[in-house]
Length: 183
Image (cartoon, rainbow, N blue to C red; front, side):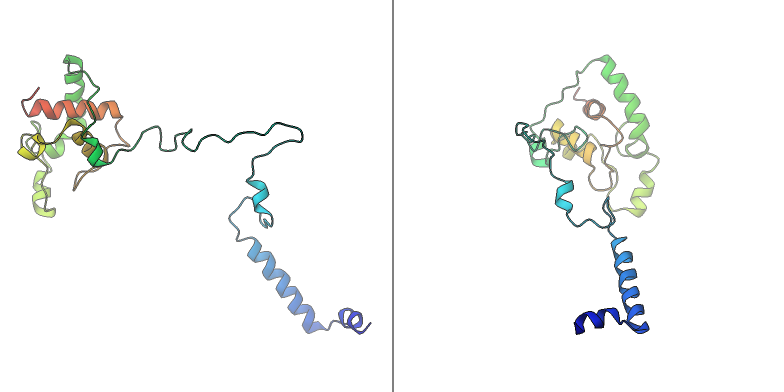
């Protein structure tokens, strides 16, 4: 009985403390970044739904839906085995020239020897200048490795995977080989 009397007789100081605790609880529940301000049983929202008497649904395999934009990522050491799927014909050479002028010539120069308009900037600000396509280092790389470098970037070279399609990058690899005199 005394406990009930104590609950009923709450003084003004206690009301303030209770109000402050309720206000604090409401404010903290608003900090939850989820879909619900106060999500007590959050696992219920993320379970696959199933109706009564419905046959059990199978979850899709983990790799069934691409989550990387449809491109598969290959490490550099495995890129050496990749083969260029773009044919080496006149249309490819014209497209390669166009892509090269738009994306690469400012650093690598019009002929691919690393003497573009920005090469002076690299010699002053960066320790690595744009590469000469006819150099032994570039000639020693496979087409797959060149594809990987253009796609992911290396050193001062930025990645072009978000700017160019895989087909366009392979086309640029054909230009690099043509600049070496190999094609």
